Amino acid sequence: MPTKEQVFESLDEIRKRFEDPSVKEKFKGFKREIWFKFPDLNVEYVLSINEDAVATLREGVVEKPDVTVEMDSTTFLGIRNKRISATQAYMSGKLKVKGAMPDLLKLQRLL
Image (cartoon, rainbow, N blue to C red; front, top):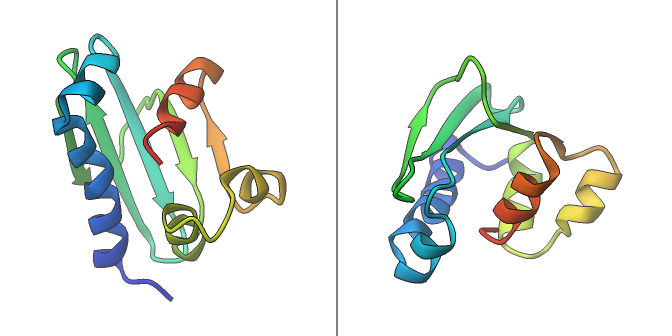
């Protein structure tokens, strides 16, 4: 089973993508909070994106997230390492997401 540190590092790689000028340009004005829940590790993280497409990552919860993503750590790292299809994980119930479809489609580019 993956560790909290491995999951955090992988999420932080997503956060670092916002340092790329082309990603920053695509997400300018896209202010959102994404709540990642990993029940198997009993840990939750929040990826916050501000209006200038600067992203921060922290352990914790958010009261009213724009997007909620829930899965186990093995599924998450499998998706990140391209061993598991996000669509297949979603269809099988291993990945649960809540949020506006345009937001989900835009965020999918970061995986």
